[in-house]
Image (spheres, rainbow, N blue to C red):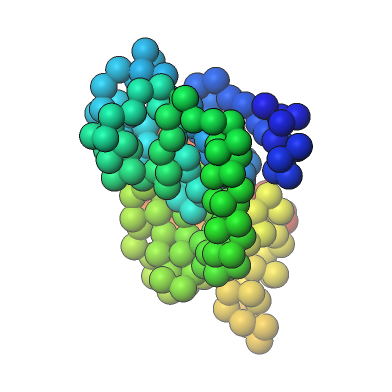
Length: 215
């Protein structure tokens, strides 16, 4: 499939063999589209399929999602589309049509990508809407104050980078900030109370003597 994708003018293809594997892969990857080939022997009923679609949508809300069903009654196609898929095809679909559909969704994604990418930042199970100033963690909305949101957004924009305390303070509170840098510790504590959950891996990490990093 990978060599065929390149022949069709599409980027490289990654293959994962389970929903859990796909969710883990999406935590650190941003594909241009996702093709999910559903086998009814492993997803025997509609409720399981719908729950799986919800998990994929939470992991990658802006990504084009195509679902390929080994059987596709009109009712099943409607349920899959209502569940969050952007397109549904049958397993008997001609390979040429499959690649054409993927190219269509890639074009649409590119056209919409500027605005969407500018407005939505994602990392693992964290989603931040910049214009709407909304935050979701594992699909659950969080209510943040103005400064809590600004602090989270700054760390998210610099994810995987250890940001020095002074740089964070100036970015969030302004270049002219002066005062006690314990203010940052206070707001990080506030933010952790709202963002972190005991059932999820922590996002905000302290690097002693330096600052903080979102991983």
